[in-house]
Image (cartoon, rainbow, N blue to C red; front, side, top):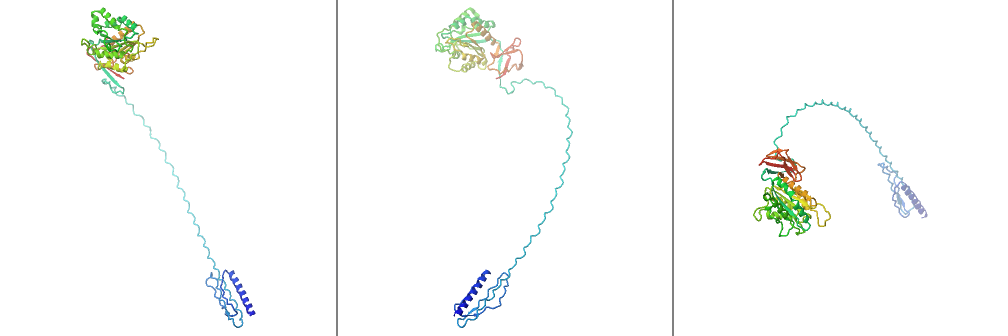
Length: 433
C-alpha cells in the first residue's frame, strides 16, 4: 500500500513537471486521474504525427489509462513524448518599393519677343491760310427793349407846348403853436418864389390847407384857390400877393398832432373832381406839387408809401407828374418841441422832390423851390428811378443820344435849346430799374 502511494506520488510529480513544461510552451493540457491504486490500462502510442501547418504546434499525446486498482501496480507508464511545436512560419519577403519615377525634363521658356519698332509721328500739318474777315454788317434798326437780361421799362410822352407849362401847387402848412415865425417868413418871402413862375409865364394854381385833422378843417382849403392862380394874378398882381400872404398864415391854434401827409390825401378827396363851384382843382395834364411846411414829424397813421401812392394814382399813367417838397426840421437845435421830419423827407425822396431845412433863410429856400418847380415844366418826369443812369431816349422811334440832360434828383429828362421836339412828337424813355 505504501508502495502504491509512493508511485502515485511520483506520478503526480511527473505530471506536475510535464504541466510546468507545457506552460513554458504557452499550452495547458487537462489530465484525468483515478484515485486508487489501479494500473494504467494502456500507454500512449510512440507515433506522434508532425503538424502539417507550420504554425500549428504539435498536440499532446493521450495520457495512458491507469491500471486497475487490484493487483500489483504495473510499471508506471512513461509520459508520451511531448509533441514538438511546428516550425514557425517565416514571414514572406518584404516587397521593395518600386523605383521612384524621375520628373520629366523642365521645359525652357520660349524666347522673349522683342518690341516692335516705335512708330514715328506723322509730319505736323501746317495751318491753313488765315481767312479774311467778311465785311462788317451795318447795324440793324434799333429794336425797342431787346432782351438783355436787365429789367427794362419804358415811359412815353407826347410833346405839347400848350399844356407843358401847367402846375398845381398844394401848400400843407403846420398850424400848431410853434409855427408863427415860419408862417410870417413864408409870407414875407413869397414874391421871390412866385417870380420864377411869372418869368416863365407858367399856368399855375395854388391851394393851402393845414396839418390839423379836426373835421372842421380836415384837408379843406384855407382860401379859395380861384384867387391864387396865374389867371387872377395876371389881372391884379398886387391883390394876388396880398391874398396869398393872408392865406398862407393859417394861424397857430391847430392840433399839436401834425398830420401833413393825411391832410394832402384828404384835400385830394375834397377837390380832385370839384369844389364849391363844381370846378376841380387838379388838372390831369398838369404837374401836382405838394409843399409840406412843418417843424415837427408827421404823425399820420398810415405808411408814407400809402399817401405817395394815393397822390400818384391821381395822375394815372403819368405818375412822374407828382412831386413832393419838404421844408422841415432836418436836425435838432435844442427846441424841445421840434422833431425831425423824416416821413416828409421820405415822401420827397419817393417822388424825386427836394428837402430844405426850415431853419434856413426862407428867401433862399423859396427862390430855389420856385426855380426847381419851374424847371420841371419843360421836362419829362419819370415815375421810376433808373439804375446807374442807364437811359435811352427815342423821339418818334429814332434814338436820340444828344441834346437832352438827365436830372437824377428830380428824375426828369430835359431837352436843350435847339433840340426840343416839335409839338405832337412821341417821346419814349427806356431805362433799367
